[in-house]
Image 1 (tube, one colour):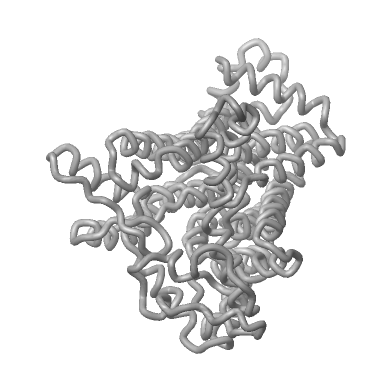
Image 2: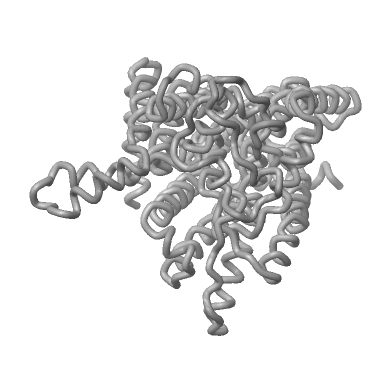
Length: 502
């Protein structure tokens, strides 16, 4: 009831603000505000000063509480230090290989080149675990700044811009009221996700996925192939979204459209990943091997199952180890679960595709648009639930998609996703050390977060096929008889459909 009233207030506000430019200004302010945290070591100094005498620094105490929510990310330090190594500059913080931990392939253990002011070849001289498509998004803020703090602020603004463009792309054909309401939803999601939304590279593939979704809505196979190929070349995992999209796009399953889609997709992947091989032979295989050998990440569903079983049978906690740039579980059980996560993700995606294929054709263009967005969002949710790695920033991919589902029937989905973001933000900022040590309270938090994701997937499946008769009845003006007995009109429509099938 409270959430319905709040949404009603937002819709009334959207009606007043529709078509006005200040909403874009408010969005940009939100993008920058969540990007005002301190570097980690500066934050620790501030926190120590405050804790020594909290009463003497009341304003600093209030600020450090907020700064912790939007504290600078270790990933940003890795991005900056990687570009510094390529450009021969002094890195920031720990050496690059320390960010990845002790357990990594041999090629990623070597020291970075010296800060000699000379250029060093990516992949050959400087080990990198992300595709070359990520480099422009790191290089632009790096060369526009002369310090880590300047880089981090510019990088965050660039990621905020990517998310803004993603949401604008998906809402561009909507009415002014829905457009404004979608952006109000986006701001709420952005603030709930906190610094995670703008301090990692995931806003870049989120932009490509949003463009691919828009191209699917507009029935443009070449644009869809190019955008999806760019997403694959930047993060690999979006390759699994092709199947769900084809299930809700019967017009793209025709031979001519399939050739256009397949050729543009292949070309985009080759253009996106090809420079890696030109820079250093074997780079693609090296990056794929790095991610293929990653362990069972502590926030994944597989790790959660292992943790719960250990707690129930009274085994000692399986403490995480820092490897491959994240905290993962080691051992035979964890490696076995991690191996099964890949096939399970593919199997769940196939089941999702079958569910999409069996749905009746959408009755209205609005239903068709929502169904395409739902197909993509459901595919992403499956990856969040079944992959062996589920870093909290992966949720960034879903922000533009959820913001674009503006109809009232998606109210519960918006609430579930906001709750998921808030829960992730809380335990990532305040209980992550407990999760690494496998404390029962932190395991319970992850249980709640994964349960919210399961409810999201159920909500997507449940709302996937609205009653076609009701939709058709709503799309036509009712006659006098229909106004007297609308139930009878719907029943007649259903009987007509049944007669046509027979």
